[in-house]
Image (cartoon, rainbow, N blue to C red):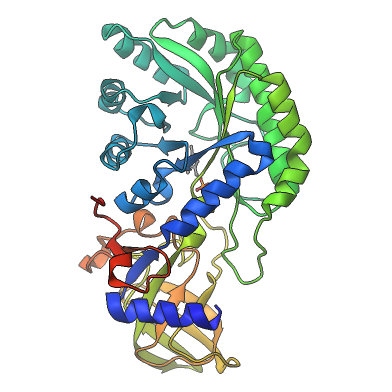
Length: 411
Ligand SMILES: *Cc1c(COP(=O)(O)O)cnc(C)c1O
């Protein structure tokens, strides 16, 4: 954290109170713009709402991102309330309930992403009862994901999509259903990858599957969605993914996609890469305890607000998120410290053995990479503390007008 940012985050904590999430929509929009410009403009950009569904975030991305990936009726309603047209929504999820499919049909969701033949049959019946043919994509589950992905959901039993091995049986059946219009395919098989070569290799897997599925369906796809897999540097020893490196590594695959599917609108779908680095979690040290040689800062925020920072959101290893004591003037580390939350459980630990210039009661800690999978991915009801405040800070946040409640819809 440079000094200007440190001062700014401290001022926001003083003004807004802690614990709080602070999101920077200008930074989110800049990420979307960068992704749309990259790859010679080959890709539209879809934002995955589950990463951060705050009303203000969805409103800030309207007209900037091309589409939203929604995964529940609740997310559909949030998107609509934030002014997104239903036609720009894609509805994924392995367990869509009948009422959710009906809701999607009723409001006119642009594309429903089918995750199984059963789901296709159920949606087909609902659509035919309404006398419509719903645009659908079929989600494909590859039999492997290249090494380098932090989270994968393929190559093992997974709940998502139609397994590659099943495509010959399933694709022609879906194609036949008259209540559905199969317009393309979707793959999201892994994420949090910081290696350009692995991302390119994964997109090559997607491309191979798209070719197989399109041949089986005998369609020229109008729409192909690549779950982008782009990672962000959560930890001190990680380097950000350079888009230029991905462009270079994936150039042949992108050219192949364009040549093989000239009619298709290609999309990259990501949540964390857009929102993750554009948010911080601010928490204050309530008191310190020196325990058996380690000073522990007991903070007003913890796993009930930020499960992921505690290493409990699908991580194999618990590692500290990048963080700073923004109350302390920059200086050499005074030692290593533990940061715990206020909950009565030993797993409520925000950081272990973290080097800081000091740790005193009243200090404000800023946890980086908290714009995605923060509040929304946390058990906020646990121990009945208040939910976190979430703020949207425009520009540099210098004036009061620049700070909005992130869960309120802007007028
Ligand atoms: C969660 C999800 C995403 C976004 O994943 P990130 O890791 O945030 O990029 C994209 N598509 C689908 C279908 C998802 O479920």
